[in-house]
Image (cartoon, rainbow, N blue to C red; front, side):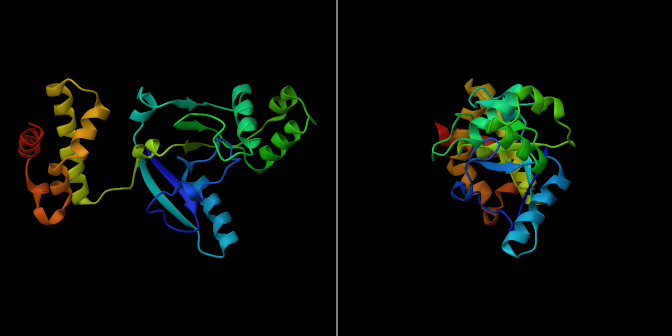
Length: 223
């Protein structure tokens, strides 16, 4: 899935220290599958910082929604549970997260909805009234709440990067079968290996080798 982050600068390294608390899904790095929505975010942040808006594109592996090693929460639409969760995070004043999820997906509390959320928190309207009065345009956000969750994101690849990625995909699948391990363990063995370090170094031209050759080198290293 292509996802986008709108800001006042291009994102090369995700730094959680820049992430704010009291957001819809808590402190974390936010993206959306809607380019137009990211553009709105970028325009606002660019205006605040007096810079040009910048949208950074990422590839998101939806495999991580199903990975049992990650705690994931997903909301298909606005609902009681979504409102309770947003209020939980909006009311959190501590540095620690109000929840322990790695990835959270769901709709956005835009300006109008944010006002209604604040009115609900202040006891000015009931939950039923909030949900009954709710009208909205399609919106979407994914919050990556932990450092571990960031491995689900990658930036678009060039031709050499694609070759390296394709090799890695086949090698990881082979490791899973031959060593009877799960995908995360196989990926960890591969991406922490000296073989991968050499493959990622374009000057070695390892990316020109077949994936079978790379896999043989890795197996020799793992002995």
